[in-house]
Length: 110
Image 1 (cartoon, rainbow, N blue to C red):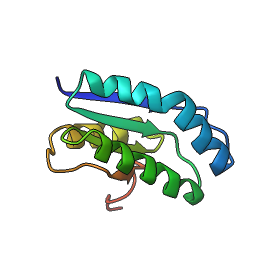
Image 2 (image 1 turned 90 degrees about the horizontal axis):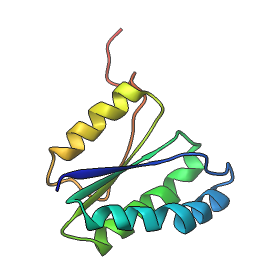
Image 3 (image 1 turned 180 degrees about the vertical axis):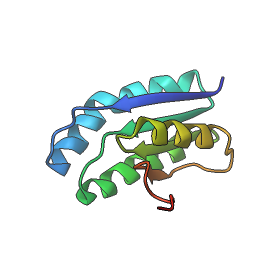
């Protein structure tokens, strides 16, 4: 069955509004994707640090709700870094309920 990927874009800037739209519009899509997959990776666009709390809570709650399936999220806008993170998550069976921020620059030496 593998890992499904749900890309979430166009959320409002205020964190409470973004969370409300995510739960109303994207959470049903996430649950549907998990019906046909062993794992789900949600890809968020970058947002301010004030979005981390609701995003992490949503991912963790969905992971608990659907255990033994895995749910993780990646936040960023670097397509290469996102692809690497998705590959890692797909092949890391012990990781669930995590939110990874990727930017394509971290961890590289100058």
